[in-house]
Amino acid sequence: MPRLAVFNNVTLDGFFSGTNGEFQWAKGHMDAEFQAFIEENARPGGVLVFGRKTYDLMRSYWPTPMALQNDPVVAEQMNALSKIVISRTMDEATWNNTRLVKGDLITEMRKLKADSGGRDMTILGSGSIVSQLADAGLIDEFQVVVNPVVLGAGRTMFQTVKKPLELKCTNTRTFRNGNVWVCYEPAA
Image 1: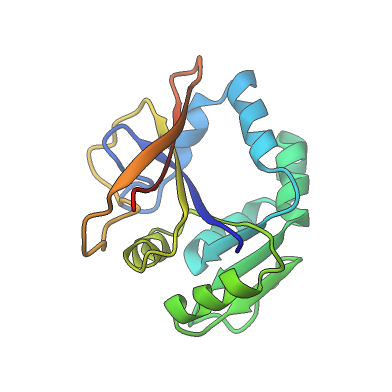
Image 2: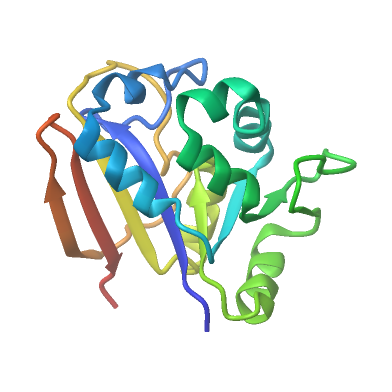
């Protein structure tokens, strides 16, 4: 069965966005080594999963000439990869290679994991989706990049988690820019 992973940047104090959705702090720690890591992670073959807010943010940047100029490797992959946006409020998904899923999140994700053609899926951003799917035991891997910055306030990926998640660390990597990538899987 395909795996469902989460890949998100967080601050040292655990926020994946500021109180108003700000995310610029994560771009402040880019260097050649970390850029190469990001480009490798954007490799083809998987399926990206977004909630509506993250989808709107990604769609507003990655298909633009600015993205192609500033970050051509990642932009090419982001635009080419298959994408799923989960939203009850959207009527259509307009970013190329995107499928809109409108039903109950847990039911739909179970179907997607069973029917994704064997391709792994990765959730980017989408804290409320991460919380719900984590509570339902549907996330197979949590990849977190801890950035050396403190916001003091914001949103966590796990803001609405209702029960403790026991995880085991499966991999780590420290970058010269101060970022630390940590990978966890459910302990049970």
